[in-house]
Structure formats: structure tokens, C-alpha cells
Amino acid sequence: LVKVTIDGITVEVPSDFTVIEAAAKAGIRIPQLCYHPELSKEGACRVCVVEIVGGRGLGAACVYPVADGMVVYTNTPKVRETRKAVVELLLANHPQDCLFCQKNQDCELQQTAADLGIREVPYTGATRSAEKDESNPSLVRDPNKCILCGRCIRACHERQGLDVYAFVNRGFKTIVEPAFGLGLDQVACTYCGQCAAVCPTAAICERDDTEKVFAALADPKKYTIVQTAPATRVALGEALGLPAGEVVTGKMVAALRRLGFDKVFDTDFSADLTIMEEGHEFLDRVVNGGVLPMITSCSPGWINFIEIKYPDLLPHLSTAKSPQGMFGALAKTYWPETQGIAVEDIYSVSIMPCTAKKAECVRPQLQSNPGIPDVDTVLTTRELARMIKNAGIDFKNLPEEEYDSPLGSSTGAAAIFGVTGGVMEAALRTVYSVLNSGADIPGIIFQPVRGMEGIKEATIEVPVNGEKVNVKLAVAHTLKNAKILMDKVRAGKADYHFIEVMACPGGCIGGGGQPQPVNAEIRAARTAALYSVDEAKTLRQSHKNPDIAALYEKWLGKPLGEKAHHLLHTHYNA
Ligand code: HC0
Image (tube, rainbow, N blue to C red; front, side):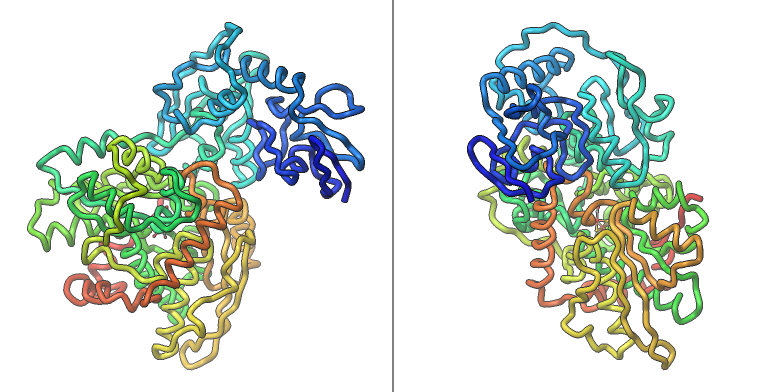
């Protein structure tokens, strides 16, 4: 440890800290744009300059290493003047359209300019006029709004093990773009949106589909159905003035009703359904010698990744559609059929923490009626928050309302889908019970698959064909960690039976469409909130959801049966 004094406050910090980290420990926030606490340090923007006593003038706090006895000032006239000039120069090249920008009031550049008291831009600079990349259903890139901080490059490389973006050209012509200036649809992009999650401006955003949904809600001929993903209920509040990790399920349901949806249903219902299908598929593979390890198939960024990078491993994927996909199939078959509604009149929307879900819903595989998508539009949590604000809904003071029945009921197992290890734990609760004559996993929860370690491994003993078998499990979150596991599987060095992969850090709670900012503390709060939703439920195993049992009995037949296979399973693009 070394002692550093910052603005008169002395703190002891590890010797490999930089000044910005030491300042955070002292409770001092230094303005920052290229710096992100979870990514490597770049020192590109110089907004974080500070005065180091005895140093050579000003230093960039994000990359300046601490030393024992160092004295730092973060708020002198010289520092303030320099920071202001740095941001004024950035603004001189930046489009001045903040009032109409998708990130208005949610932009770190705008916030930094406001914090620094910038009231005018004294310089006139050239602005770029590069074309927007709107090549895909998930993400929109606007290079004109890029401040060259490089966070997207680092997030893609360091979190996901991919290198979709790079700096190209030199000097003023420098921009960030995929290889050869191709659209994101032409490169190895999984649409996970982790680039958008760290972008400080509107240079990379989710495609905004809110107007499409407003139009459907205003169309009297449309019967609108909405489903809400597990992780949205513990993050939506953050974009509407509530603390991180507050469970806002009831308020979210109320808001969706006030927006005008005819039916407000829950992806958690179809998460329970997924466990019935995927759990039985796993049992079938174990008992009858199918391809193992079986790998979960619900995270669409992960599906895009395995299709692009490991197509030879596709037979390992569960054929179960994601809960979004399964719900969409029910919304365009079961619901119109049992309610006497024409399928063409149904408009199905899902609220997801994920940008890749937008690309998932346009897959032709997710059309139970040829030519008609099962999910018409996916909105991210951020877009739903914007719609709620747009409609003038006083979210904080909404009453708590219940989902509509029967596609709104769920167990605790479904809630934990939104956190890394959750799909595995939910599946184990059911698989264990089926193999142990209905007995529950002791204590219901399965601790070894919980936590934020990048790769978790565990073993659970279950009886198979009259013998005790140690079922070996692995759980990975982020594609970088998935890659480590897939290399082992490809090399024949993985003796797992079942692997869960989620593309985003922490699982869907850290999805690319969730409110910003996101950091470890916020992810921990969202995770704890989802576990609290599970704990509060009387029913915590998917097979105990009575509405799921009734659906199979009255309409669907049995898990893996012909109708279930046709509607709830899929195939992948090799
Ligand atoms: Fe997820 Fe899902 S848990 S991928 O993270 O499985 O996006 O929340 O909706 O589909 O249920 C996202 C979250 C989902 C799906 C579910 C799964």
C-alpha cells in the first residue's frame, strides 16, 4: 500500500492504482470520458487532468500511477481551465443537436459539459459527415457523435473476446469503425450491445423502435400483447429516478397498461416453459446418449457468437427456443386460437434488457405462422423508460398491478433466469426433482452456480437409470469466458454434461439494453433483487407452475411432444 494525499485527504491504496482510482477511494470524482472503471486505461481524452505536486505539469489521472507520499490537486484554477478547454474542443467537433439526440439527458459528454459550467463553445471546428450504420435490427452507429474515447473497442475486445471495432485513419480523419468500413451486419458482431452500454455519447445506441410501438398502440385494429423479461423489473426503475436494484414489477405492469397494451404478460411464464422443454431435453440426452455437453440457448448474443465462431459445436446447443421465442410462439398461436382473435390483428411486443433480442425476433425460425413474426417489436429497458416519460406517466407513484392471466404467472425459478447461473439453477431444480421422485434439491437453491466468477464449475449427484451419476456443470458469462469453455469442448477436454452461457456480464441484468451507467455495484444490486424475487415466491420450481401444467394438459400436449417440438424448438444458422 502507498499513501496519497488528494485535495488534502490522505488515503492508503494499492501501489498499482492510478490517481483516478485513489481519488475514488477518497470520495473525489474526477471528470472522465475515455476512462471506464471496468476497462483498461487509455488516457485518450485528457478530461481527467490533475495537478501532481512535483510532477511535470498536469497529468491524466486515469493513467498516472500513484506513488508513496504523492500530493495531488484535482480542482485548481489551472485544472479547471484545462478541463474546460479539453471539453470545449471536443464540443467544437461534435454535432450540437443535444435537444433532439437519443441520449439527451443521458449523455456523459453533455453531463461533463454541464458539470464544468460550459456555456458556449469558443472554437469553431470541422464536424464529420460520416454515414450512420443502420444495417442491422439491434444497434445504430453514428460516427459523427463519436469522441474517440475507445471504450467500445475495449469493451468488445476485453469483455467479449471480439474485435468488431478499431481506430482507422490518422489525425482529424480518425474514426472508430468495423473492418473496411463494413456495416455491423457484415462483421462478427453478436449485437450484444456492450459497446452501446459503455458509449458515453450517442455514437452507438440501440435502434429506437418506440414510435413503431406507439403506432401499434394507437391502431384500434391491433390487439397488443406485451411480455417483460426477467431482468427488466430490477433495472427499469433506475431510468425513472429509483435506486439500482429496486424491484418495480408491479409498477412496470401498471405503466404498460397505461400505455395501452391489451394484455400485459410475462416472459417469466415462458422461462418456466423453457425449463420444462430444456430440462426434459437434457434428461433425454443424458438417458439416451445424446450430444453432451448440452449448452443453453436463450441468450441471443451467445447464439450469434456460436453460429459465427463455433458452428461445429451447434449440435451441443439445446434446441429449445429462448423464453422470448417461446412466448412469441404462444402469442401468435395459443392466444389467438383460444381467444378467437385473428393472428394478423395481434401485435406482440417484448421488453428486454438486451439489444440482441431485436435481432433474434427477426429470425425466420421465429415465425409460427409463415411470414408473420412471433414477436413484432422488441424494446430495450431504456426504450420502455423513454416511452413512459413520453406518455407523462408518473412512474414512481404508480400502484403495483398484477400481470394478466394465465400467461403472466411464474415461479421463482423463472426470475433468476436474468442472472448468470440462473438458467442452470432453474433447470437443476426441475431435473433433480424429476430424477429423485419429486424430491427437491436440498434448500432449493444451488449455491455453486451463483456469483460473479467468469466461469463456475460444479457437480451434482443424481440417479440416472438406477445409478448415481455425478452430473458436471459449467456456467460462463461474457463471450470471452464462453470462448474459453468452447475451446475446451472443441478440443474434447470438457467432460461437462450441461453448460450455461450468457453473453453479458452478470447475465441479462448486465444486458446491453439496460439503463446506464452500469458497474459492478449496480449489477450486484440487480442480482440481489432478482434473488429476492425468487425468495418471495411460494412456488420456486418451474414444473410446479399450475398454469404451465394446465397449458400442457389442455393445449400443448407433453414436453418434447409433437406440438411442443413444432412451436417451442428451433434450429440454428450454420
Ligand atoms: Fe434474458 Fe431470457 S433471461 S435471455 O437474459 O433465457 O434478454 O432478462 O428475457 O428470452 O427469460 C434477456 C433477461 C430474457 C429470454 C428469459 C432467457
